[in-house]
Length: 179
Image 1 (cartoon, rainbow, N blue to C red):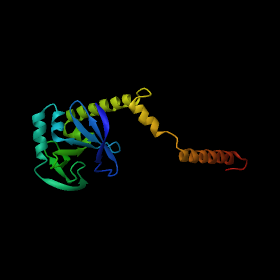
Image 2 (image 1 turned 120 degrees about the vertical axis):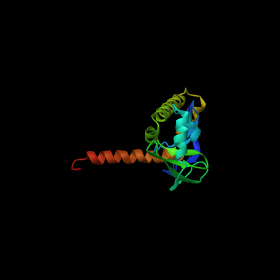
Image 3 (image 1 turned 45 degrees about the horizontal axis):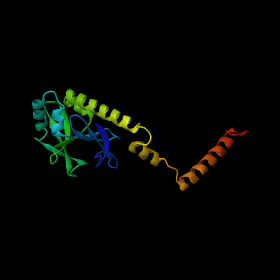
Image 4 (image 1 turned 30 degrees about the horizontal axis):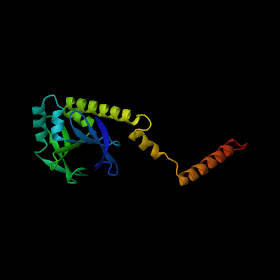
């Protein structure tokens, strides 16, 4: 179970890249900014305690599609809203991909067992990724992290000026008569 960067963009945040979560029940995407989920229909039903009733409810969304101003992160087709009358919820879907753009709050209203299963999968993937990033020095993950913070000549130059200005600001604020 892990979290990896995706090439897909969030339909809500637009400039935010989604994360791919690989879990025991399957793979789906999540926006780290708005916590939106892009999840295939078969994975939604797999997360439910009653798969057949869940699939019946998901089929209700296909009765009437209302277009949104959002685009599918996978196939770049227009996303639509579909009503699940039996559950009293509206889901945003991509008819081409058979996937849903939603969040845990809406999934809780749709089917509590789906929301609970996905929440657990997200927490497991997050803790797994956190333990991978805390790997010992010399491993690929720690080497990549160390390279991000390597000091370049230009970076060092600007940091020196920042420290200098910081000292001047401290002196000016502690000078007598400073407000």
